[in-house]
Length: 284
Ligand code: NDP
Image (cartoon, rainbow, N blue to C red):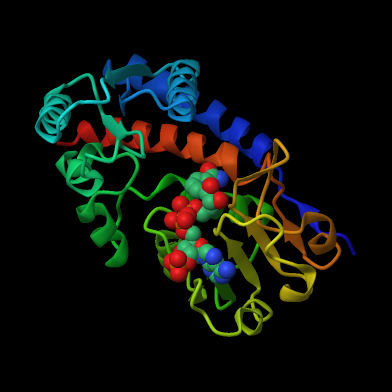
């Protein structure tokens, strides 16, 4: 039987509508407009598009949005000073640094300057530590979006075998921790994993976050598994994921397409994290 396709575009749209309703309620009842500041250093064309899309998404949700564009030659001190100003700005509830930064800047140091309360990407070491400790925290947007897709698709998680391919700090590791939090038995695979297929074939939930087109083939997938394709690759100008979509569709129980799967959820979760940061600021 062909896999049920999880429509991330529709899920993200529905979530963004609910976020817009909560934003409007927050404005009307508490007089607060959630605000997101995106800091871009330099003129990388792809980053410019991502930043613009984030601003548009904020505005559509009724949020306040600021884009801070700094010249490519900005120093570490200047960048950190600008972030500190945003930490103090009461109109801003979320601060995001568009990555990658120009090579002369230290990303890790810059991210650590963002106040953990305003870290809507969930990359700050304090928030990463809270996630590891199983505490309530700001979770990175992409894995948070994956969890939402699994939930709306009705995929059972408790006691299931979950395999995550990829161990980056922004996708693979937080993804594994979130699945663990939901009582999956989790395996993390990476480029040095021996006999990758022996792991993936056991997976009831298989998450691919590698960045290699067509990498996950049908023979790597257990019949009926939920396969979530986080990868974004470009082949002959076309966007595709890590999964051999046509073949895996015949084996899997659920499958996310690329485009139209995890991608749209990431930006929706950025809005959610900003809204939640604004709501939390009321209790501080
Ligand atoms: P990274 O390059 O940081 O990490 C890739 C991971 O894949 C690494 O852990 C690497 O292992 C592993 N890997 C590479 N080759 C193999 C292999 N042959 N076998 C097993 N594992 C392998 O990427 P990101 O985590 O940042 O992103 C992963 C993908 O997800 C990319 O395509 C990216 O574009 C996409 N992405 C999509 C988002 C969305 O919104 N949909 C958001 C963020 C990312 P090792 O650690 O050993 O090198």
